[in-house]
Every structure is written in structure tokens, then in C-alpha cells.
Image (cartoon, rainbow, N blue to C red; front, top):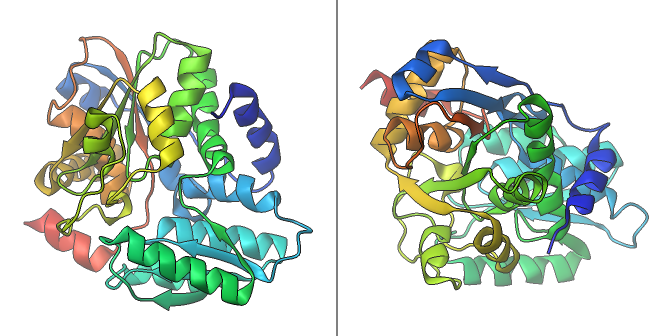
Length: 320
């Protein structure tokens, strides 16, 4: 299990590579929700998402090792973060993305110097994993798991340390969840520092392996997942480590629909003036659609986990 000391060490490891993101508030959104809402703006993070934290902590551990490069498997944000950190450290990077991954995220990974390989159905994680491991072995690449790695979890957990510094009396934290790296990290940091804090994970409806896994207390893979506007948290399976941490430290996992995400995203864009991607909006969508039971007047932090938006696609949804 990742410890609080691991997360504190990660903070030192990554400090020169990432931003300390702000904790924002909105009187209007708080009034509408009946809660004192705060928003951790990881949409302002390097590469546009929280993933830079975990990638920085993992890749700095590989400096000096006998590898030809690193391999990331990602729908977008993890790939960008891996490519960014590899470029910073002078390590070649190869990023595997699924068919249909947003062009903005693919182009961003390439702009950091990575080789991008498209192909494969991420609804079938076993097949993708085998393909990735074969490629890593053939080319002597170190695989960088997007979530199920203690160094990645610890890196994402640094968000929790910042929340506690900016809002020591936080009551609730709501975190988007795909594979569970950011949820595991933040929950670990918060619960080990202040056990009274309630932590909720929010996945995409019918496309979140963590949701049934949390309820059945074992790894469950979701097959034939639907497409979702929230591609960044579309994950057929949680990880062994992330499920372990989630069962230990998270109070509940819920899901939100695309329509609920769109409604929440419209409010964030128009009222908070923040460009947040659909996956990053899931936390606020859970509040806005009352998917989690939160006492009135609670101090609630919603993690806005990313801001990498395919504008052509998203603007059509927002205009509908």
C-alpha cells in the first residue's frame, strides 16, 4: 500500500516538473448546490491534466536505467503526460492510443516528441495489454502504467496534500475515476491525514470498471462498454493496486451519464469560466445531479482533473 510518506516524497520528486494548481470557489455554484463548493483546477496542470504528477514521479525513478525508452498506453492524457516527462528527461517515448482517440490529445503527445501508435479496442484490456507488453519487450521499453503503479498513485496523491493545505477543514472530496489512480492517491493522502474526510469516486455510466469492482470487492471487467463523451475516464477495469486503495479509503463510487456531464460542463464553462474536459467534469456532475449524499453546508472539493478538449466535438454537445 502507498503510504503518506510515499506521497510526501513524490511531492519533492515532482516539484520542478508540475504546477501547484489553485483551489477555486464559486458563490453561485455553491448556492445552487447548497454546499460550499471548491474546485481543484488540475485543468491548469502541465499537459492539461493531473496525469503529469504520476508520470513525473514514475519517470524520474527510471533515469539512468538500461532502457531504450518508455511505453505509455492511453486514451490521451496519460500519453501526453508520459511524452512530456520523457521529453524533459531525455527519454524516448512510445504512446499507444485506441482507435478514435481525440486528435487534440494525439497531436499533443506528438508535439512532446513521442511516437504515437494507434490501434486496438481499449474495451478489451487483455488484448491491449498483451500487445503493449510484446512491444515493450521487442524494443526494450519500460511500460508506464496509467494508474496501477505505486509511484503513479503517490504522484497523483500530491493533489490531496495541496487540498489539505488550502482547505484544512475540507469535509468531502469528489474525484473522477477511470482506472483509479487519482482516486487512490487523493483518498490515501486525505484519509491518512484527516480520516473524517469523505471521499467519493465518480465514473462514466456503464463504462467504469471500478464501479462494479468496488461493489463486489473484487476486480470486475466491463465488456462491451459504450462510447462516452468522458473518454478520459472510460476504463473497462480498475487495477489491482487501485482497487485495494479504493476499498480501504473511499466511501463510495457512483457514475454519471453523458447528459449529466454536459449539464455540469456547461455550468463550469459559463459560471466558473473554466474550460474543463468531460472526464474532468464528472466530479461536479455528481454534485449537480445529486448522485452523492452530502450534508448541507459541507465544504466540498470537486477535482477538475483535466482540460484537454476536442472543441469541435464538445461545442456541438454544449450547443444542443
